[in-house]
Image 1 (cartoon, rainbow, N blue to C red):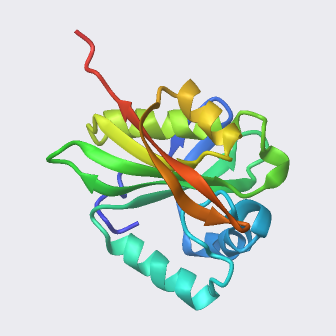
Image 2: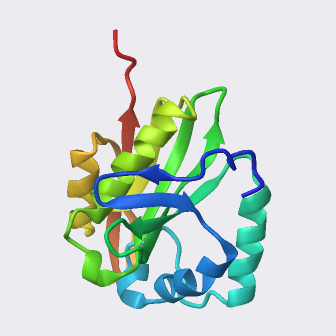
Length: 183
């Protein structure tokens, strides 16, 4: 990526490798984002997303100084299984917002998302010197909430009935990870 993060080529976790998202990753990413089973957990409704819109987003991200998106690669097979990202990176305030999608459903409930988040947090805390990472998650996404807690996220606010899905209103949970310097 040309956004100043090119030096951060690859980060390894126990199960995954994070590498910068590439243009040839867009087709599989679009498949995941438009899949109703995956889409229901995402912060935006991408059901009608087109390849042209995805490519426009990619070009924006590539030039952004406030966003970095990684492809999540299964270390064992080399398969691209999802994406994770940091957005609204503010180095002065040492904060950012985290996003993640494990698009390959056979990788759900196997610790890959947790490993990717932990790897991304190490990158954010180390290479970027960020101390505050936030995310939003819907209260019906129990699997993600559990994983985020394992990674050190705490609930800081609940937006009651703020998300309409499948004809019902759900709470949005705002979670935060604080990286405290070791003394």
